[in-house]
Length: 541
Image (cartoon, rainbow, N blue to C red; front, side, top):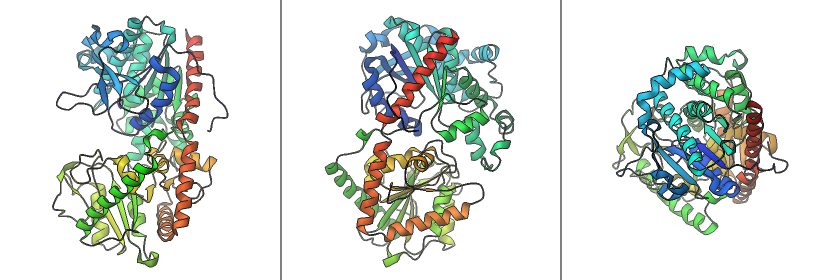
């Protein structure tokens, strides 16, 4: 997937990219957009705008949004009569400082039933069985379409110069509504994970052994996913350019959405997020000090400076993200040379009640509302009670977003990352896999799986070795769970016992591999997508 040469940037008068995660960190899409922003900003400057939901208040403001009422010729002061939509304009406080519009979409809710009827009549979107966050996503999406049209009119932009990029099913109705109110605009739709594919895996069904036998529409009915699946499939079909973030997701979309993406747009990383050498060393020292402090209180013992710190992180999807496999691999990690200690962190958010300042349980830093039902907590508890962990393996669950305000760690994720020696992300379902890419961008070798887009990219372009590429890709399928756990444990043991020279080699390799996944290379796939959208739009109108 590496671009051979630059693709000419198509002249675009307004490039509007929208997602529920613009200025709103929830999952991996936030990382995609926030790391991609700088190179898009360099290419399109004032013609680029990100559009996100205004879910903030004076009491709870967005930590990454700075308002500026004068942007876009005072667009925020314009009265948008459609659905009584209100907007705030400003800058997203990330590398590149791109322009952003936050949209208050409450006024769309009273009109949703009528909009759903229109979507059925015009496009065949089945919203009959909607539930959960469907209405909220659709209300926001329709509002973004209205904002894009009004912004173009306010700036006097020819509709043919408007390119609108919608991310994930939550924005799908915005793409379709924009087709109705501004058909001349070129539209792009990106699936970062099909809703039905994620649901198949999340419900414990074997995606890979029976992949060729799955039908997306049939599974949507079986798993009560008709509305989201119908919307996502329809948006993909009607987009001027449909993209997926990896070859593995493109294959999934082709099978479950019945449409092959026109372009694969792999996710890169922005090196501006990585601290310089001096700050990196400071962060590593402070982070390790904090981790040792927490570990010593939880485990009631001391740890030496050469203790291996291992971690996994990301969304709390026990099976999909490989949290189960990570924990079970630790159960096989025994007899480490020189009696070396391992601190194994689980950095995934759960339903936190409050910080456990007394550390009443020896493996978790916060009290959960549902401790007895949380899959991670239950598995760690059983591993300890059944004495399946080696004496030197110390598992610690930090169940919160590391935003620097959790009450125990009080260090943000990126600031804690330099303290870690090795990461493990053995996902069962992972369209791309930002966490392992972030890891190597920070010079931390990683173990991941071949069921991630990132893992597939490594296998296609790099040497599959911690010491030669900084990455070890472990094979996962529906029938080799124990073999995969054993292989991860073997890699962990080998790294724990490795010499300083060997580890330095792995760290250097990680940095070098990350350089090849810089957005300055991967952005060319988006330029191809823009050109594809223009060509197909021109054919359509």
